[in-house]
Image (cartoon, one colour):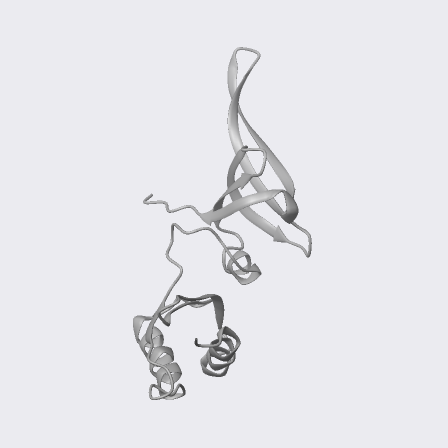
Length: 152
């Protein structure tokens, strides 16, 4: 079986300063799935380059394998802190372990929490008024976070 730590080390050697590793999965059949991202946006050519680098540094004669390198996708939940950093000042959807959903702008990232700002309309004195709020959310309370895709 292919060693996950070996794949991780190869990935780290191949990644540029703005790229980061999101996830590595290896099946029982040695199908290797690597997910990477880039703070500046990930080009398909970069996935291809990293895939080739890993392939060139593994011995097929020792163990056969297949490899797939891709981006995390826009609709998948965040898995690593760098994804939060990449989404700073962008709209995200946070689902808490309680089931509550908060959608707003990710304004702050700290070691143990994030801050989301959002607004909504409420009826006050027979008028609708826009109310702005912030939520401090501890990472331990988050079930999932993902980017919000807007076509405005």
